[in-house]
Length: 92
Figure 1 (cartoon, rainbow, N blue to C red):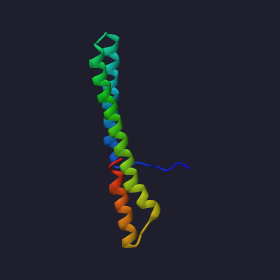
Figure 2 (figure 1 turned 180 degrees about the horizontal axis):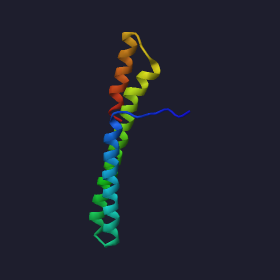
Figure 3 (figure 1 turned 60 degrees about the vertical axis):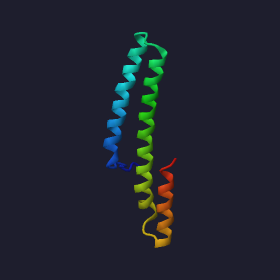
């Protein structure tokens, strides 16, 4: 089964990942040119954080949209529990 899982956030996520990809290429170039390890570690940390943020946005978007689509309409107290779950998931 191949469903189209495009969300509005995907365009932003793709931009983030492409920036991280370019940044990673720069780090590789720095390594090849013998830059100091501290500089390399700092730049790798920045790449890692960019990828983590892209993943976070992807997961949160999935929870926000796909969960609602999967469970459909709920009673107000049930919806309140789902909304609370979505809110707490943002802290992961």
